[in-house]
Amino acid sequence: MMKKIAFFDTKPYDKEVFDEENTHYEMVYFESKLNEKTARLAQGFDCVCAFVNDDINQKVIDTLYENGIRLIALRSAGYNNVDLKAAQDKITIVRVPSYSPHSIAEHAFSLLQTLNRKIHRAYIRTRDFNFSLVGMNGIVLYQKTIGIVGVGAIGRAMIQIAKGYGMRVVCFDPHPDESLGVEFVDLDTLFKESDVISLHCPLTKATYHMINKESIAKMKKGVYFINTSRGALVDTASLLDALNDGKIRGAGLDVYEEEEDLFFEDKSLTIVKDNILSLLISRPNVIVTSHQAFLTDESLTQIARTTFDNLDQYFAHQPLENEIRYQK
Image (cartoon, rainbow, N blue to C red; front, side, top):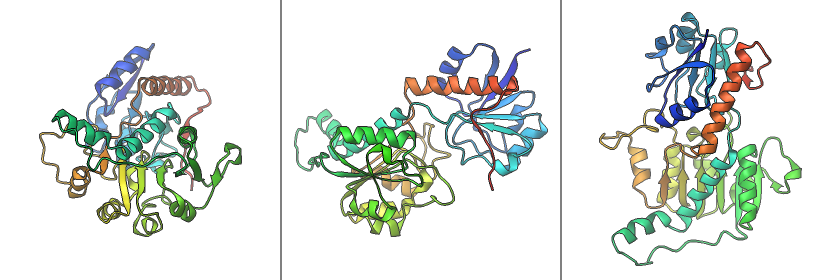
């Protein structure tokens, strides 16, 4: 008998690629996010497949467990939305630890260069036949310093791109890898010396709001700031203040700490009651993309294939390569 998988928070591109890669599972797609209100939809399924903005808290875990769910397969690398402590000894959690890290690194650099060379503003101007170059100057990245926070797979892809630009690369990571041929420094030094700062680290208790009023004060005046990692790494109110006073020259954000009920959805006909996000989007030196850095054909295919590998291993009672467990 085919195992039944309940997919939550799905979009047309999810369904397309998972249907294409599927060989032996029965799959049902729910557009709604997995949360306390929707968890009972999983009744009668063998597994739940969830995404980054699903709220998998203790109540959701308990409801899924009561309805016979023993496996949650995340279609993402991050798992800060999962209460791992509540899940231990009840539900197995697996994830997709890596899916085309170059997709995210390339998006980060696209945000940087779009901000720096005012491509977004040029696009709007020329559509109105405004060919003025006033206010369109940028900087040369060659020999500038980029500070990369976190040198996992995505951070390493960023290093490669930055070296291609001829930039000096400084990095911070709890586990420095000297074989990468870059300078590893402490965070204070990275903030002080970088012309560009790009975040590529996970969200943990230690990294929550690591970009705040105090850390921003240590940065160069006129720094570019890029975040394609997790929104809550940044105290957004402090970021906005720094943009207002010119401390930060421009910000490229693919994530936002209050994105859960906004990103991945069409809110164009809705009054969005988030004043900070509204102020960010209104600024000409800020680009916000809706958590789309991962969204390439290659990434979607890899996410589907790894998810099916995770499912196959679990149902065949094989060792789970991508299981995540609660750690005290």
